Image 1 (cartoon, helix red, strand yellow):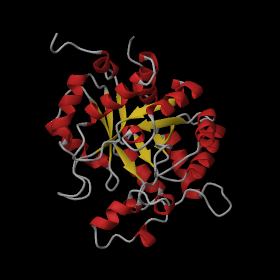
Image 2 (cartoon, one colour):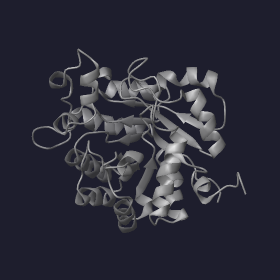
Image 3 (cartoon, one colour):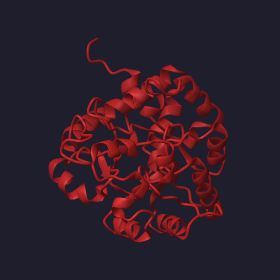
Length: 304
């Protein structure tokens, strides 16, 4: 009958979306979303979403928290983050320390500011086209490894702070090789909140062997909507990877970032629905959409 709930609706119940881009990020006109937070969060609540992490490529989203709280007071738990791009000083432990003190729950390593993003022709290109003074040669140089291939002192300290403050740490847009160096160190010290940021994306381009190694080291593997968007990966390839490595190592996110897209919860519903139709079970999807991301934020699992 009209309005009846479907399996696709149920897949979203309890979901924790770790990769929701904020609306007002770069300017009042550039790269805006279709809806501001106080309009899309009620939609997420109605769909049964449990929590979201707000991400910005430019400014720490933690500074938005009190303002959003004045406009949205529903049941969706709104967590905040910092992305270690040049605008906040790059891979700077002090920025992480300050963000944690303000209540941030997640740290994203450099995205457009990474050397890898520049070398792979990633998101920085959109910024260079939009802003006169955005200079990739000057700005997009950040790496978390030194010339010998070891983690830099700054990256080591950021990892230590993630341990100390119970923070989720995402690899952002650094190279897959750098991400593996970080994953090996995280495994060595027993850190369990490392997220390999969308390794199948064009900005990272990790081979299956690298994804497999990262999962074996205990990192969670992010799959976001752009991974399977038209022109990207066949959903069947993602399903095979999840089947091979186990749903317990995956996290599904929206990575919502365009005014042409629906709201984050609708976009996440699309991702989960496509992967369900391609062969994942309800249990596998709930593991990657709800249980695993909740664990990365230190949240207890919901009752079955």
